[in-house]
Length: 250
Image (cartoon, rainbow, N blue to C red; front, side, top):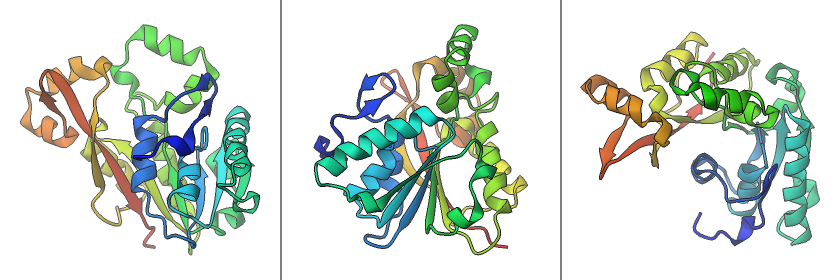
């Protein structure tokens, strides 16, 4: 995303701000076929990924879906700004509130060519108690950050849901932090009967400072360093963001 003008102002529940590193990477790496791809954006949040796919990648349409009504409202507000600017046609968008993954009707899923998910994946095993309490006390923070002890709790739910969909179904794209461990990620896929369609697209990212203590511990094990794709450069820890593309092969 070299041209930032298309998403300013960018509305969130706190005001206006730039997209997160995760959102930028997923928007850049998601495989959209211009004029053809109909995207189901699960956990759309503020709508940044779907908006990018419509404006920059020329997707045919996007359905914005989230479990939280406030995020649907925020996504709709951001889309309305782009409709007003003439960058998006109203007919290209749809909004769907789903209280959980299984409440998204299959007939709705089947109308799309691709499903994207940028999931909550904050691993509570590596989060201090004060940060846990702060997140847990805020329903908005909790809805898009908390990923369970391993960080893969909601990710695993997504894998199970996707694997259970009847054929035919759209491909799925999910963005995950390598800090969670590739073995853990691929084990969660395997348990659901999934395998990646191809090797994930790797993007460089800075590891949040709250996890540096654990990165130092992992640095004592070459296998952990490799599995989590972490490295230290000029005193700063880095990781990879992994864009996985899934196809159910039943």
